[in-house]
Image 1 (cartoon, helix red, strand yellow):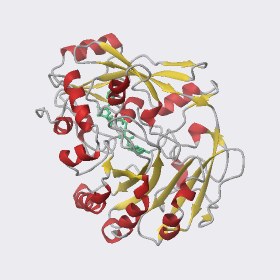
Image 2 (spheres, helix red, strand yellow):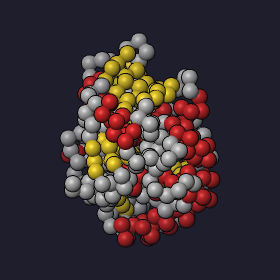
Image 3 (tube, helix red, strand yellow):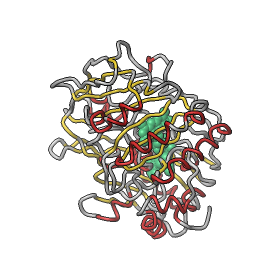
Image 4 (cartoon, helix red, strand yellow):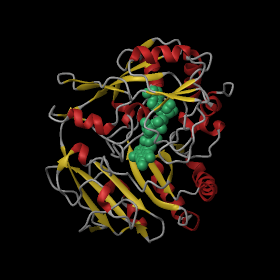
Length: 418
Ligand SMILES: Cc1cc2nc3c(=O)[nH]c(=O)nc-3n(C[C@H](O)[C@H](O)[C@H](O)COP(=O)(O)OP(=O)(O)OC[C@H]3O[C@@H](n4cnc5c(N)ncnc54)[C@H](O)[C@@H]3O)c2cc1C
């Protein structure tokens, strides 16, 4: 077998095999027989979270599932399905997801497992859309967890880091379909962004600010507005007259339509279009999430380390996320501001800067994105994710022999490394 690698190419998985069962029964057999096994989604994480030295299993080969319930406004989908495929399947149903991440190429189960998010003051992470989780446990048995019946067990099992089992299907909340228009702006200064942070992020359904920390302020702001009513304004910026790529200087051909042209939710909420390479394609990523109340302090801290950031940053994106109750969600218990970094693809150059960013932000207790690069150790993670101890108990009870563990998960839950 050629060793599988992640999307970014910076992780070569150590698995001795990659299997792709075509039925849930075959998946159950494979899991029950394995000594060590982990699910692989679309491989868009930048660290070893998905890795195992046993079997990697993709659920992308399971029979396609997209059962919508119009009355309940839900859809039951394969865990291995991508958001792009789901959007296609929702076409014509009059139903939509409330939010999406910056790209639709990622698998639903993999995204939910790492607390992946988009932006929006009123929008939770993608995991908050989950109503039920269906997963194969270490004994090969299928279990279903329900948001309305399973309380803490559910709250601990959605953002799971793949440590509780292989998710075959998820039921997601839907909303009536809607249109979005994207408006780009340039020329927003850091002073104006910090002085008017709440106004700016409250001005549209979903807001992102982008900077490479080389110029005086933000290279661009993208306001995603629910079509209808008055278009949003950004009095401290200049309306863009051409489409803007999040990474300054790149042509926006792989980006979703902007310039206020209305379009369906799934063709505007992600920054990047399906069928194209998202972002730059040649990059590493990190992201730290702090309490929204600390947004200005965090931006000031980053503004103060331009000399370190500018040589290794392709772009930094600022987004907001509503608080939730999912134990390992980076937005657990607090309205959140996410500080994302697309780095140059040079791990040796980026590594020290990651440590420096974490040092500068340390007083703000930043929570790293589980699927991106970070240096924070397990002790600090336990302090910043207040339910990590509860999750450790849950994971050890669900998987006593550690079939779904890998070194990253073992370090977090204080179990023997596998
Ligand atoms: C270009 C780019 C843009 C990005 N933009 C965003 C963004 O806007 N917002 C954001 O928050 N993140 C973003 N990310 C990060 C990305 O969303 C996460 O890394 C996410 O986990 C990717 O999903 P995946 O299917 O590729 O997961 P993988 O990397 O394949 O796996 C991640 C984890 O999920 C587990 N997993 C996967 N499938 C299953 C399953 N069926 N059952 C149980 N566990 C499973 C794996 O075991 C692993 O622990 C971006 C990444 C890239 C490359």
